[in-house]
Image (tube, rainbow, N blue to C red):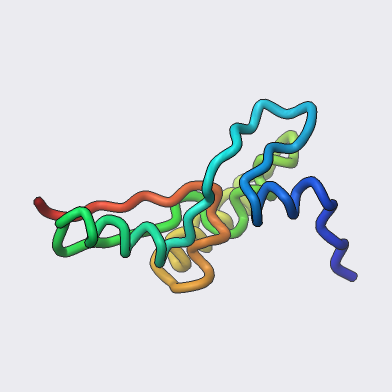
Length: 100
Protein backbone atom coordinates (compact mmCIF):
# COMPACT_ATOMS: atom_id res chain seq x y z
CA UNK A 1 0.00 0.00 0.00
CA UNK A 2 1.56 3.34 -1.04
CA UNK A 3 2.13 5.88 1.71
CA UNK A 4 0.76 9.39 1.42
CA UNK A 5 3.32 12.11 0.76
CA UNK A 6 3.87 14.20 3.93
CA UNK A 7 2.50 17.75 3.64
CA UNK A 8 5.94 19.38 3.82
CA UNK A 9 7.25 17.19 0.99
CA UNK A 10 4.19 18.00 -1.10
CA UNK A 11 4.81 21.73 -0.51
CA UNK A 12 8.43 21.27 -1.62
CA UNK A 13 7.31 19.72 -4.90
CA UNK A 14 4.36 22.01 -5.63
CA UNK A 15 5.52 25.35 -4.18
CA UNK A 16 9.30 25.06 -3.83
CA UNK A 17 9.03 25.59 -0.07
CA UNK A 18 11.86 23.75 1.74
CA UNK A 19 11.19 21.07 4.34
CA UNK A 20 11.92 22.29 7.87
CA UNK A 21 15.17 21.01 9.34
CA UNK A 22 16.72 20.16 5.98
CA UNK A 23 19.40 21.92 3.96
CA UNK A 24 17.26 21.74 0.85
CA UNK A 25 16.89 25.10 -0.90
CA UNK A 26 13.63 26.59 -2.03
CA UNK A 27 13.20 27.01 -5.75
CA UNK A 28 11.31 25.87 -8.77
CA UNK A 29 11.53 22.19 -9.62
CA UNK A 30 11.37 21.85 -13.37
CA UNK A 31 9.76 19.04 -15.21
CA UNK A 32 11.83 17.81 -18.13
CA UNK A 33 9.33 19.44 -20.49
CA UNK A 34 9.67 22.83 -18.76
CA UNK A 35 13.47 22.68 -18.88
CA UNK A 36 13.36 21.65 -22.55
CA UNK A 37 11.10 24.60 -23.39
CA UNK A 38 13.29 27.07 -21.46
CA UNK A 39 16.42 25.91 -23.26
CA UNK A 40 14.71 26.32 -26.64
CA UNK A 41 13.38 29.76 -25.62
CA UNK A 42 16.97 30.70 -24.76
CA UNK A 43 17.92 29.98 -28.36
CA UNK A 44 19.44 26.51 -28.08
CA UNK A 45 18.74 23.92 -30.77
CA UNK A 46 18.97 20.11 -30.72
CA UNK A 47 17.88 20.20 -27.07
CA UNK A 48 17.92 17.01 -25.04
CA UNK A 49 16.86 16.65 -21.39
CA UNK A 50 17.53 13.48 -19.42
CA UNK A 51 17.07 12.28 -15.85
CA UNK A 52 20.35 11.33 -14.19
CA UNK A 53 19.56 8.96 -11.31
CA UNK A 54 16.35 7.39 -12.55
CA UNK A 55 13.39 6.33 -10.45
CA UNK A 56 15.49 4.10 -8.17
CA UNK A 57 17.97 6.84 -7.27
CA UNK A 58 16.10 7.94 -4.16
CA UNK A 59 15.81 4.34 -3.04
CA UNK A 60 19.56 3.87 -3.27
CA UNK A 61 20.13 7.05 -1.24
CA UNK A 62 17.87 5.71 1.50
CA UNK A 63 19.62 2.41 2.12
CA UNK A 64 22.93 2.07 3.89
CA UNK A 65 24.42 -0.51 1.54
CA UNK A 66 23.04 -2.09 -1.60
CA UNK A 67 24.34 -5.33 -2.99
CA UNK A 68 25.77 -5.27 -6.51
CA UNK A 69 22.60 -6.72 -8.05
CA UNK A 70 20.40 -3.94 -6.65
CA UNK A 71 22.86 -1.26 -7.74
CA UNK A 72 23.12 -2.74 -11.24
CA UNK A 73 19.31 -2.94 -11.52
CA UNK A 74 18.99 0.71 -10.47
CA UNK A 75 21.59 1.73 -13.05
CA UNK A 76 19.82 -0.25 -15.78
CA UNK A 77 16.50 1.37 -14.81
CA UNK A 78 18.09 4.86 -14.87
CA UNK A 79 19.48 4.27 -18.36
CA UNK A 80 16.18 2.88 -19.66
CA UNK A 81 14.12 5.74 -18.20
CA UNK A 82 16.47 8.71 -18.72
CA UNK A 83 14.56 10.16 -21.68
CA UNK A 84 11.07 8.70 -21.18
CA UNK A 85 8.55 11.55 -20.76
CA UNK A 86 6.96 11.48 -17.32
CA UNK A 87 9.39 8.87 -15.98
CA UNK A 88 12.58 10.95 -16.28
CA UNK A 89 11.02 13.43 -13.85
CA UNK A 90 11.45 10.83 -11.09
CA UNK A 91 15.19 11.49 -11.17
CA UNK A 92 16.42 13.83 -8.45
CA UNK A 93 18.38 15.74 -11.10
CA UNK A 94 17.79 16.60 -14.74
CA UNK A 95 20.38 17.77 -17.21
CA UNK A 96 19.66 19.64 -20.39
CA UNK A 97 22.04 20.14 -23.29
CA UNK A 98 21.73 21.86 -26.64
CA UNK A 99 23.63 23.69 -29.37
CA UNK A 100 24.19 27.41 -29.50
